[in-house]
Image (cartoon, rainbow, N blue to C red; front, side, top):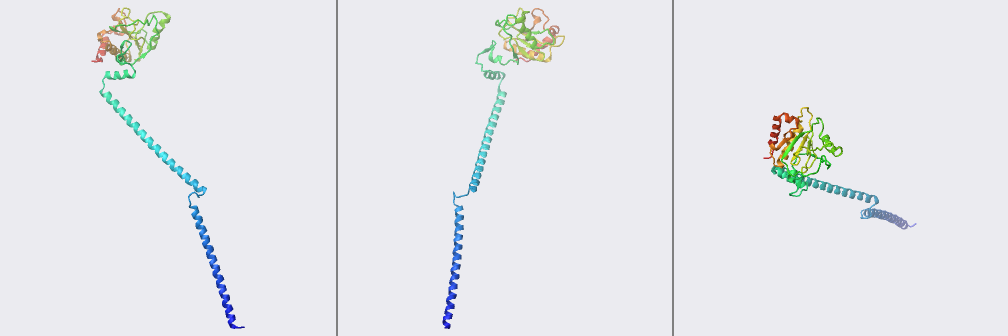
Amino acid sequence: MNPYLIDYERERQRRMQSLRGAQTRSAGSRSGRIRQTEETAKRQVRNIPGQATAHDRKARTAALARRRRIRRIRRFAAGVCLVSFLLIAALLLMTNGNVSAEEKSSLRKTVKIEEEQLNLPSGSTVQGLPAEQFAAHPAWTENFLTPNEYSRPGEPLEEVKNIFVHYTANPGTSAVQNRSYFEQQKDVHQASVSAHFIIGYEGEIIQCLPLDEIGYAVQTRNYDSISIECCYKAKDGSFTQETYDSLVALLQWLVDVYDLDTDDILRHYDCGGKKCPLYYTEHEDAWEQLKGDVAAGQKK
């Protein structure tokens, strides 16, 4: 065989093998690039807005909801703080205003405020007295008797010259019980009896009759006087300290509003000789002391 042909054939086969190897390597490289390109494309697709998975969308929605809740809570807290601050400021202003008014106002100005709170028109009267003067009366319970001819005849009391002090003559009975006794007269018709006020032994005051109506307390003086009945416990007819204090306060107010003097305060005893109030008919010094205590607390 020709040696040149043998060498040529070997060279041709070697080249063919090299070519096939190169083609294989090129195909593998091309396949790798294709796979890489596909992975890159997939990653890019995942990053495209609107192409997120359901899990990602839920996560973003939950995060957004949390942020909104936090903003709402912060706004609510800020609003509460602002409202609280405004309320405290208003309260402080009101308190300061009240203190200032108390320091500067006189008794009459206080009475005027009470009149306005009661919606009483200027110049009006209550039970025959100017409204502002009536509003300054000591604390009492208004419990008028039922109109009847035995204890509340309803006749007008057109002037007041004296204030009469009485005692109930029933030791240990309360103001409520004595008021009931007056009220019963409309049914039992046993006596013509009543008073404008009853003071209990604990200091409570009950108003039984309006101050512009007469009562049946002092036979010859019912049409120009006001009467006060006082409860008691002691056998000698002396009053408890609570009764005494309420009596003095009520007398001070009555003397002031009717422009009277302490000498115009009388015992039932001083008109007719009845030993009423018992203790103060037997202890003149105690009676003078009572009138002195009334004078000491009168307005100047």
